[in-house]
Length: 243
Picture (cartoon, rainbow, N blue to C red):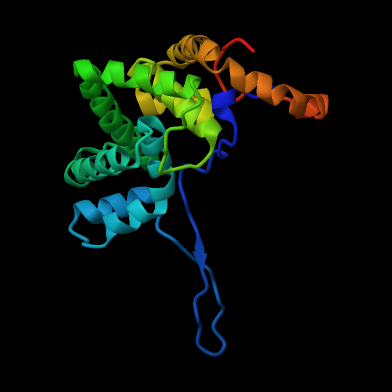
């Protein structure tokens, strides 16, 4: 059975986006596709002063970076601010990129760090913990909390429960369970070992299960109608969490 917080997750996209563009030719001249510049080339052009290169790079990866931010913070306004902070940082620090990883991994790492900074600042404020508990109490009593990013009751429940986890566990669950990143990719983005990703996933899942047990019960009738091949365990897509 799919983990409740992994329902509807998006598939992992290729790390280096590329495309082709038809090129017109003169009579008798062969038409050849013109490949879009790779990410590293766009970043190099930006460092060298091309005014459009960074915008092109950001637009190429905007949707995935936004998904990471909004699912980590569960607040579209906070996510927009974190993404803006991250891209300003990447814009200014582009000359520090050494090519040890893919450009998209570097961008994701900056976005995740910006989100984690906000989560830690929020956790340091005494009122934030009580607010999260009140949110869960409201959900338990059936009082739905509005979520600008989704009207799904399941999504609201999951986002509220995620906010009760430590920031490091939130980050790995968002990347691995919600966005479908392989463990190795999540480890590279977060700058930790694959084993640490797996252990944080396992601890985070163990803490979420009691809070989201009602979602499993609601999904049980649907699961009975699926074929065995269609079932997905919480550990699928990386990690070693319990089913």
